[in-house]
Image (tube, rainbow, N blue to C red; front, side, top):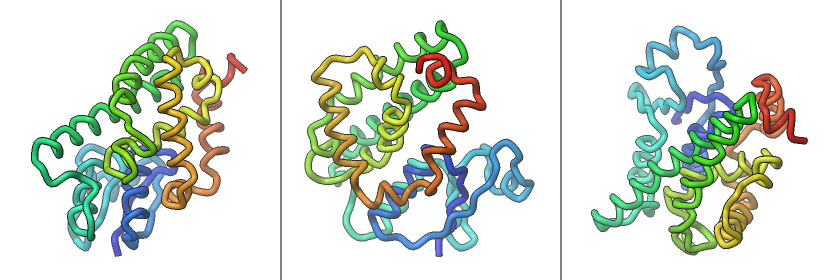
Length: 218
């Protein structure tokens, strides 16, 4: 049995849980408090971050690495076999990580100026990411690791309703976002990738961070 070390709100953990759910990989989740990291966790994680995947006595970290391991050790593939196409998907996954960071910085900004700066970064990089979207998933009808890398971002942007409405993106890009989100959020492998209390916990987290977009733009 694989064990994944998690913080319930972490989008990077969710990436790997979506991948494992989709590929029917059995696992158990062990939650920690990232604001009070236990010593045993710090001994396992050289970066002090989640997720960590325990495979027997072996430790894997970084969600992109974990996802590729899961993909390569289960039937089927969520990455292309062609080296160039695989490299392009990996590059897109890196872009998705940047967009997640842009979103997080905007979501926890405590004043208008900082929020608008990070939101502009989000709009720019989200537009670049979505320009490659084919629908209904990122590359077409089949799920890929690009999808599992950014579905957590889709979910969080939708939950931050004020930010979603604020986004200054073209109608074409917004339509792509909406199609991707609608296709993804309906899937059980996504629904089961977060705790049952995720939405309320996420709301509380933004309140505790004095989020400008959450508290002052209702």
